[in-house]
Amino acid sequence: MRSCMADSAHDREHVYRVLYTALDIAKTEDGVDGDVLICACLLHDIGRQAQFADPTLDHAEVGSEMAFDFLLENGFEKFFAERVRHCILAHRFRRSDPPVTVEARILFDADKLDVAGALGMARSLIYIGAVGEPLYSLAPDGSVSDGTGDTEPSFFQEYKFKLENLYSRFYTRRGSELALERRGAAVDFYERLYSEVNTPYVAGKAELETYLE
Image 1: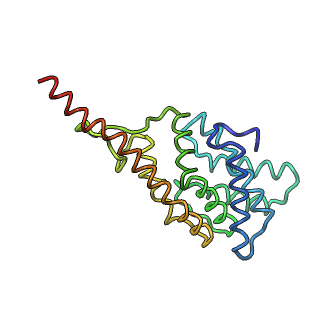
Image 2: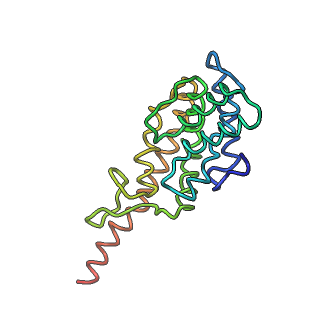
Image 3: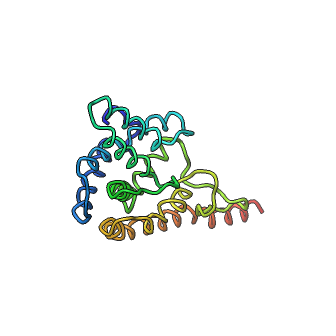
């Protein structure tokens, strides 16, 4: 895992936070295979480096196969490796195939909690900076877009597409509880940031037009 981290938003500390949160959630769920869960948490982002190098790749898909092969090569049973592979494959927010097993649902929730609240905003900004995406984009009329319906990537687009919509996507009761505790910090940050970005455009453009007249 440590050799496969591609950026500071998905570093080993992110992996450990996901693991520790998953273990917290697991205490409230029945029938959890701790070995599968821990293994899946530790390996869930090993495909990130490949996606970072080639954005057309899906790190969940790449990582699930890497983990499967790694486990088989290191003496794990195929059934075990298959369960870990499913957890990793289904942990991504943007995939259409939902997590089926309890371990996969826990990993999904633990990973999404790390992009909720203030921590999630910070990690998203780090990642967007690393890949060279802008903070926001402008609407056709020259105003600052709040991200709604944007097709071009930006922090505001990511917030409206993913970060704002996380909170109805959790599969476990404990995950949902933790997410709601963090939600207010994310909303407050986004609204304040949008206000601070938008105000100069509204006031400053009017002043510029007056000056040019």
